[in-house]
Image (cartoon, rainbow over all chains, first blue to last red):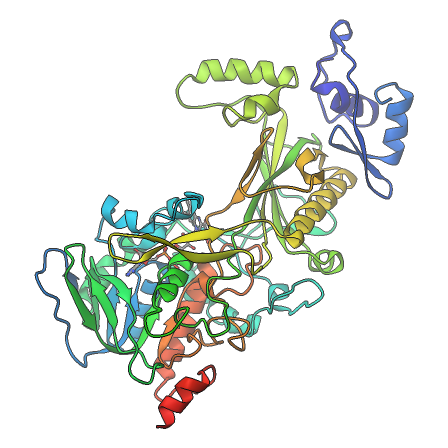
Length: 65
Length: 511
Ligand SMILES: Cc1cc2nc3c(=O)[nH]c(=O)nc-3n(C[C@H](O)[C@H](O)[C@H](O)COP(=O)(O)OP(=O)(O)OC[C@H]3O[C@@H](n4cnc5c(N)ncnc54)[C@H](O)[C@@H]3O)c2cc1C
């Protein structure tokens, strides 16, 4: 997975098929993510808007610390 | 008739001929002159520039040092005015734009009703070559996003006023079109309320005065304020500045690159490349914010143009793959394949801090150049942030797209213009306000009939009279207002009322 798709790719593969993820696990560099509270039930992860449930799933899958 | 003043060694204008003298031949001035002539009024239409662009005339628009050149580059000073390069996008104001909403805005709103402007929609559409067309949403826009509805717009060809109306003006028996006729002063009669004449000057430094019963300035928003401010020989602070409002509450529409998005393939089918939305009334009322259009633009392939196309394409593909697109966006504009960009046209608060004022620098004609203070108010920042967040959440809920919001939204200090990390906040070249319409001079510069407070027979046409900008493009409504002003001048056989005259002026009139 390339860097751009690190979060969006995770969102896509995990919850919606919105992004074509060019999976390349050998190249997967985990970078630290920034989570910001937006409003009840919503956060941004590196700017991408996610629901609370999705944030929990991202954490579970190790995409977000 | 067309009269070119260039090269004349003296200026002589007919006496007692004109009902109305109109300065400025952009959309406002030409629409007004034509409507007046249709009703049998005799009009002198005075255009500062020639029939074609010249650097000499354009240089008069140059702003003072320290002011963003954006304010001179986004206007044109020759016959047809800025319509010579407008894009033609037309949108109606909304009734909510005419609500007072004191909980949201500090300054007064429109002192006239929405219906007053709506009345002139059909003739304004005809002027803009849109008579048989209806406002439509962008093809493919889905009604899936709560708090927003599909935006409705119309595209004028775009009408170039100079090109379209030259023949009509030239052949009119009632309109004299003067070109290379710079209006440089508006002398008052002894009562200090009635206009004596427009003082006209050519680039050969030849001067003269033209007289009419009524006078209208239609010079574009920045220049309307600038000329009135410059007319301070007889009245301190300039004409219409009794309440200290002249030049204040200047507005533009804010163009915010709100972020990017990844489209949902189930919704973005069949080559749809853009969708456009507009804020719903309930949302803006409950959030206490201004209106906004949000446009989603999407591209399936890496695209670039111009010289070095192949190199750019290579760089874009690499940058997009490696998450470096924000850095590369600082070098040139592009959109990553399979991604979209969100852009907006957002209402700006009429704020006294945003203003046009005079510097000490002078142009070739002797008029002081303008400085412009233009920033985002707290209200503007609140609008941008609320629109972005709501749109991103609703687009997600509606299954339209996944949105990435830019970091600057969460920062306090966003200046105008703002270029950071591939994101952009700047204007739309929609200059508005600075001679705002109000019930009294404590809140504005012109009355509900567009008459300059403190004067009997001086009027302003154009978006400078907008007390609020909404999130609609300004040209069609300013044409509607110009037609309304024409009707007022056509009906106006009686003496104007005296509201807005200073005590000093009233005394002078009584004696
Ligand atoms: C790139 C661009 C794109 C745009 N796109 C859109 C769009 O899609 N939709 C939209 O609604 N709006 C758009 N606009 C804005 C639109 O062009 C203006 O709203 C419109 O032209 C204003 O009309 P006006 O007659 O008030 O002023 P102007 O068109 O600026 O005309 C003023 C006239 O006054 C003359 N003048 C100036 N000073 C003097 C003087 N002292 N004496 C005599 N004459 C003088 C000037 O030469 C000019 O002819 C755009 C603007 C730009 C720059």
